[in-house]
Amino acid sequence: MKEFISRLRNTFLLILIMCLAFCISLLISNIFDNESLIPAIMMLAVFIISLVTKGYRYGVIASLISVLAVNYAFTFPYFRFNFTMSENLVSAIIMIIVTMITGTLATKLRNQDALKAESEMERMRANLLRAVSHDLRTPLTTIYGSSSTILDNYDVLSDEQKQKMLLGIREDSEWLMRMVENLLSVTRLDSDNVKLIKSPTVLDELIDSVIVKFRRKYPDKPIVLTLPEEFTIISIDAMLIQQVLFNILENAISHAKGMTQIEFKVYLRDKNAVFEISDDGCGIPKERLKTIFSGLYTGEIIPSDTKINSGIGLSVCSSIIKAHGSVISAENNEKGGATFRFALETENENNE
Image (cartoon, rainbow, N blue to C red; front, side, top):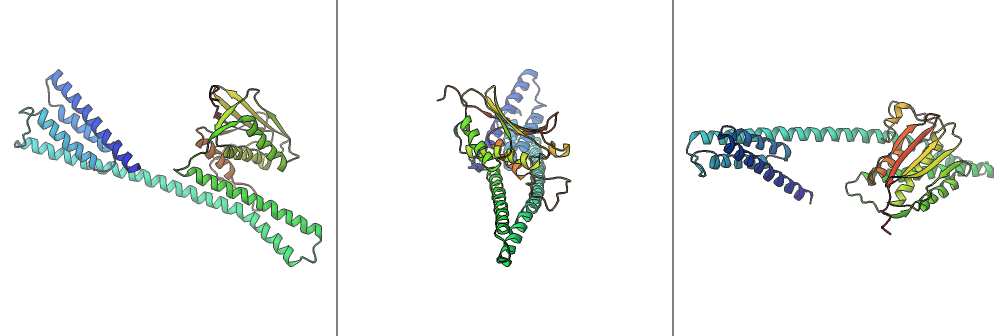
């Protein structure tokens, strides 16, 4: 299907550009009564076609059309093909050579751009793999150590010690499950065939689901909630947006040192529902603001005994919001802390 669309596009460009060049040539010929510029105009058209289409085929076809058009409409005897004259043959050969050279250069440039993009993707994959490997090592080491200790010293350990180790194993296992879910979301959203499962969702119900889940896991963490009074419906993939909101809230719990409360605000602006999650913690280092949604730590040493997400959760958030046609941003507050913000389009009020 993509190949068919590409051929259709290239054919359309070929016809369009050649028709424009022919019309311009006729106009110049009639107004100025001068045909010396016609070959240059047709050559320019062939050059443009070679640049905007893939491969050599369309450039060669354009070159042949140009030679025939110039020979038929702008070379004596008019409106008749005549290749017996040596200058006509030389002109045709020159145009074909120029087309082949242009097509070759354009193809090389496209291949270089593709190789550069692929190299950048490989570098990002390698960095992501290193970050994920680091993040997985700590909880796996804890799980292995605790389980081995329980098995080797089952009769020696008290019930309280066993329960404490088992709770640690469960917490690390839950963290690993969230990491895997985040990575699967990134993989799915980076796919060309991804399809969001959008449905009309009541804003209050969406927020309520996130807050219930958050307070169940963090009952002692204060959160101030502000919602619009208007009944609001947004067309979204509810499960993914819930993941975005929960990831941002959990990110504040994990990284906002000195935080005393989280402010979760949603307000309406134009035809959008704007989501803002702010904390009063330590804020985000300036060097991290540029790469915070890339899923990568750059130039930052991560202690081996810490269990942090390496930005994978925020990378998921960025991918999900981008798939919904919006952009997520992060900024530091003047009085301390950070704010994450994104907007989602609301449903038409008349669309029940």
